[in-house]
Image 1 (cartoon, one colour):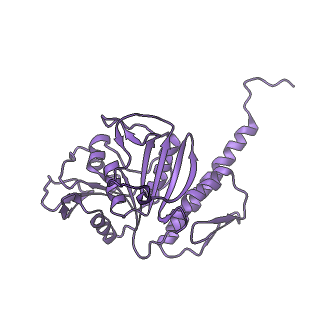
Image 2: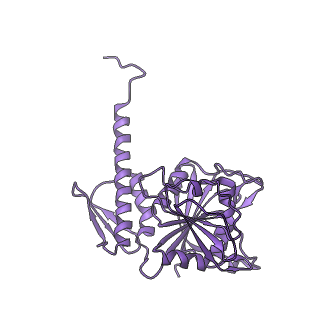
Image 3: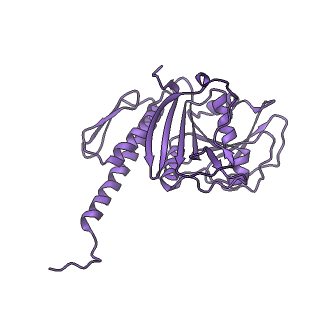
Length: 304
């Protein structure tokens, strides 16, 4: 029998379907681990309907009784350490940056859509789905008008938090207009803004010479029950939390792109010698053509 050159590749289609099913199961497991850890009910083991058993240790290391595709296995390896991190004594705080090879997150005009590729965007949405609150600075909301919701994967929208001590974000931005997710507008103590829609809560914080203290932001969210917090942007906001020692983890996604000028990913206080540079424990994963550097800021590269 002669096959048409345009005949579908049934083996490839079946393989793709199997990979998609495995990714879906891995993501379901990841969410269940995060949920049961938050409820203080995680026993270290999950058993699926088909009898597949996932065992997870306190560091996020795992083993599975079923054979998984490489993509599903990598998904578990990326996310389980974050899901099992100790939230009993205080919030865990993670930041994400998407940057070029030369350390830029946007051009001089602020154009940033998109430095990184589609797999990295999906990764960001997974991160949003695994936190209670996502925090962005005023500049990010003014420039990008983000939705800060979970759309590319299955998951619950986090609390959206706009850090705007001087009240410069216009009320027309989507986070303030679209009631799809609860939203907080964090202002300086003396700052006043017009009334918002019902889904927006205004919270006032004391200001310092450098703006709002990152510790005060985290404490405010902790009082509201937020135990996993994402600092999503922009670069200056993430840098302030990093400089203050308030980040537990950083996901830095690097794209094979050279911008040559523009807004830097991270800006910290100047140092004179490299022994004062941060050298956190690092794991690396491919996200399409991009590379994810998963930095554990509570552990040094030498294991200390």
